[in-house]
Amino acid sequence: MSGSHHAPWPRGRAVGGALMIMTLALAACQPLGEGNDEPAGSDPAASGGGGATGRLSIATGGTGGVYFPLGGGLADLISENIEGYTASAEETNASVDNMNLIGSGDSDIAFVLGDTAADAVGGTGEFEGAAVEACAIGILYTNFTQLVASADSGITSVADLEGKRVSLGEAESGTEVIGLRVLEGGGLDPDADIERAQLGVAETVDALRDGTLDAGFWSGGLPTGALVDYASTGDMVLVPTAEFAAELQGTYGEYYLESEIPAETYEGQDEAIGVLGVPNVLVVNTSMDEGLQEQLTALLFEHKDDLVAVHPAAEELDQEAASDVPFMDVCPGAQTFYGS
Image (cartoon, rainbow, N blue to C red; front, side, top):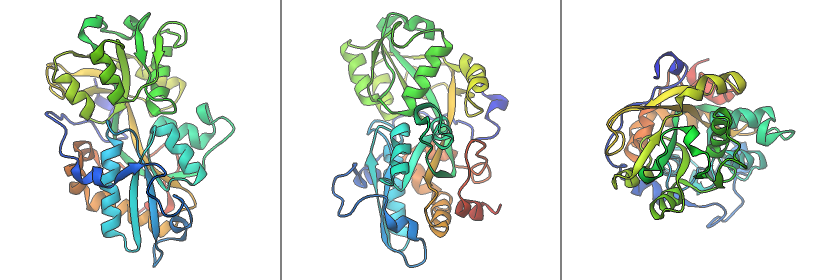
C-alpha cells in the first residue's frame, strides 16, 4: 500500500529478526538532566564549528523505542568526530517534549516526528501561540504507526477500539498526537469511547502481557525492540491504519503517508500491514552555528554504516532525499552540505 505516497521521503524496508545490538548506543545515553556539569543546550552549540568546545544534548525518546539507541549512536559519533565537542543522548517523552526542549535551549539536537515538528514551527496544535525556532538537519527515516493489540482482545480494526483499554503513548509524545488523530479519523472520542492510558512502548507491552491493556499506539521505526520481544510470545496483533492517510493528509499536511510494515518484520507476521507513516526529522535550534549544522549533517551520511550497526532503521538514511522537507526550513548549514 506504499507506492507513490512515499516519493518525497525514504521508503520503508523489510526488516526482520531481533533488534540489533545496542550496547554502543546505550553507553552514551542518560536521563535528561543527570550527570551534566553544565546546562544542556547552551552557548557551545551556538558558538560554532571552528575551534568551539562544548557538550551537546540530544533529545531522544523512551528506552524501548528507536530514537534512544540511534541518539546514543549519534552522540558517540559526535564525540569521536567533531573536534571540541562531546555529546550525550537524553531519555525523554519524545517528539512534543523534544520540540519544547529545543525551544527552551535545554537540548541542542532532537529526533522529532514530522507532524509534531510542523506544528511546533508553525505555532499550531500543542504549540498554539508558542512557535519554536527550529530548522531541520534532514529527513532520517519513516516512523510507522504500530497499533498493537493482544490476540485475546479480538481487535482487528480501529473501530474495534471502542470500549477497550487503549494507550495513546506517553503524554507529550508524537505517538499521542498521531493516536488522537487516528481515533478522530475512525470517529472515536478518546475521552469517551475508550479507556485511555498514556504509556510508553515498553510499558504498553507490559500492560498487554498482564491483561490490563487491550491495545496501544506506538509510532516508531522498524523493528521496535519492545515489540520484537512481545511478538515472540505469539500474542501480538498489528492493526491496520493506512486507511486514514488521505484524510489526515488533507486535514493536517503532507507528512502523513500511506505506508506498510513488510511481512515478517515481526515474528508471526505473515502478511504486510498497511499503516500510517510519518517521516522523522533531526532538528536543531536556529541559533546553532551554521558550521556545526554542516558538520552534523555530514556526520549522518559519512558514518551511516555506524548508525545502521546501532539500529537498522538508519538504513533509510538517503542523502538525495534528506533535504526534501516541505513542512519546515532546512538549516542553512545543512543546505550547504546538500549543495543547495
